[in-house]
Length: 181
Image (tube, rainbow, N blue to C red; front, side):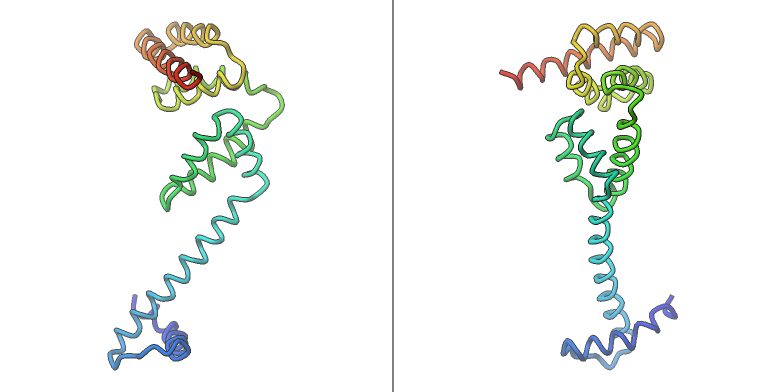
């Protein structure tokens, strides 16, 4: 691996002299400090370009749709948690799920909510299910319509999935009622 650092030595020496850094007599010490310095510059540039990539047109479309369905508070929290591990996932989900698929014109947002609730319940993804119950309400589904979706879930996914879905919609309805007081 040290052979990879050799090309950065002249750059590091130049930067060191330019920044008036005192260079050590220990060659490895100098190379390692130069490498760390260049890695830091690389991370700064990488993060700057990552932010730019998140401003693509499809990302902007996705954010707008995501905010409309899930609400500003949820989207702001999701984006704020987009650290080194989650930034690419946020970009992927926002561009492809929300920017591409949710913006297709052949299904309404309401219809997509109907489909999503059934699929997410079948997959046993409780966090996403509750999130999309809120989205379904935002997309114009009534509480009774959501209840009927839970009945469909019970028939096609089984009683345990239906009963858990019923608990989840009760939680979400209660939260929404508390927020609206």
